[in-house]
Image: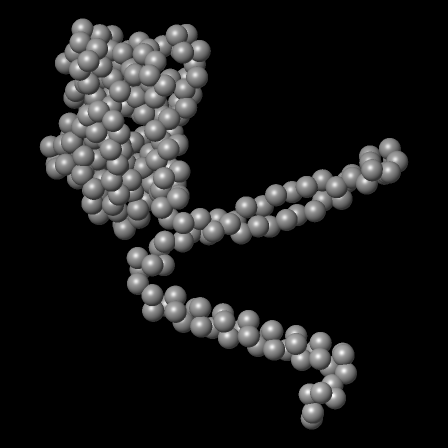
Length: 261
């Protein structure tokens, strides 16, 4: 058949056929390449599906038509997010919940770091660093630079995690908490981010190297920290654990699992 003699309809059908075959071939090649690609390459992209729902009401609709309900149009959009962008966003969000706990007797001395886990100003930190100093001799330096009084709750049981309450009145209760990760969903090899440091925040990345056993509360990660109260979070910004006296005794790559106070 001479292609020059094809009708318009035949040309359109031929174009559609070629496009269809090309898309299938592209898909096959892409899947094949992903199968043989290194893990470090396949982990660089995460796909997040966002769904938005819009209510569409005709401008000329009568009240009776409006009362029956508007038409609902659902749009589904796939947004490609690079792994480094996701990590940076998670760190930025977690930093809003991090506080530095200092002594009232020496406001320049960092006693431990802490992290806000409740909008009312509930903070988790290292019990071993704070307990010898009493319960009321602390101030918390917020990410904004403001200083508020911090009172440690009387420890209960053998937990090495300290719970403190920040003064809600002096900061109008405007605290940004971090969500605590679901322990049942933690997996070996899952990415974690460490945020620590004695001064400005320092960060590091690693993976979960060992999960807690049935009777333990320590989790091991391939990223280290020595500052009491330093934390590790998931790649999505949920709190996994923090450095305590018990975790430090096990090694500087161990962290005590965070739980709701």
